[in-house]
Length: 257
Image 1: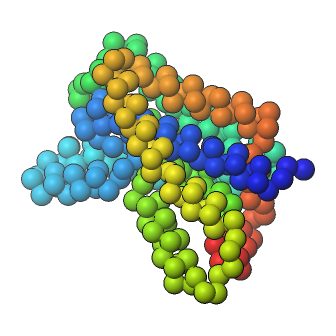
Image 2: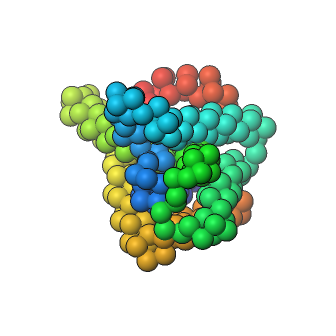
């Protein structure tokens, strides 16, 4: 049986890799899809409001597409993850990441087939919206596929929540420093939560450089990273939480997670 430290290190590595993938994909989406974010839904929501106020219904809908697709992706990914856990599948991460890779691959093949590897044209509008939905779906599935590391909640596709968790972890530690025993678990959780931001940033930088050189073809980088993670999980399963969703929530409450 794998040691807890080994499991933690493995899952932390996966979290950091997925944060890099998310930053990469989000930047490619912004550069190629008329400044639309595929996982940063706060910015998209603000743009929906701006377009509605200006009376631009079509533009508002286009800005809403990634929001709707992301939610669908999260729901589908969460349902898949729950089924895999209940059935005791050893490699519970691989199926979700394989679906994500397939969605990114579909976007990439579409861009190649239409010779639009730079900026995706806005017309026809249905094609643009569907291509946007592919990347947003991928990010939603990733969000739901990998959510926990050693008691810490991780969101590898958006950063505001992770920075909030990081600050809360530190504040809780300071507030309870006299009562809380020294434990390595806190340090590991803080490192994991705090490490998501720089990994996402690194992915964003790499995505920007990649798009400058290869356009949307740079998505081969996150595609390859996801494929590698799928293979790794199939060969060396990254053990995750066990039990039903309700049982896991109870465990988190009792352990102050």
